[in-house]
Amino acid sequence: MSSHTELFPNYKNNNDALDLLRSMLEIDPKKRIAIEVALAHPFLESLHNVEDEPRYSESFTFDFEHQELTKEEVQQLIWEEIREFHPELPSNYPKNGHTSSSKSVDSDKANESTKEQQHDH
Image 1 (cartoon, rainbow, N blue to C red):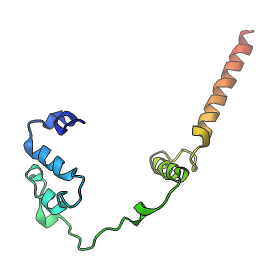
Image 2 (image 1 turned 90 degrees about the horizontal axis):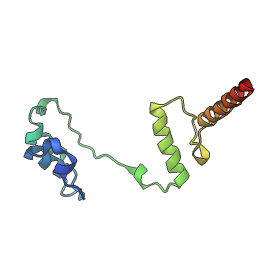
Image 3 (image 1 turned 135 degrees about the vertical axis):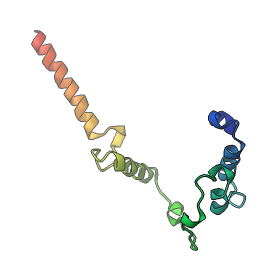
């Protein structure tokens, strides 16, 4: 397993950065750094402004994380996220790993090849 200094070599001499990173990446949520403490961490000192940081009294719920999803449903959800950045893609996850657009590209290439062969003869 790589150490944080191997993953972030630009920060290998910055103990504050590595300390904050370790604290934020703690697996055990009870040991993980709280947001208020993280914002006050020395590494973020230049960004920290108590008057400009919103506070929430309610907890967030992540009920969606407890859904039982099939492989196909997960694929479709990931596809929908991809489409947020590439709306030109088809709305449904392509079956067999091919989009209709990739099929049409393959078809276009085949047509061009046939035309070239016909032209050469």
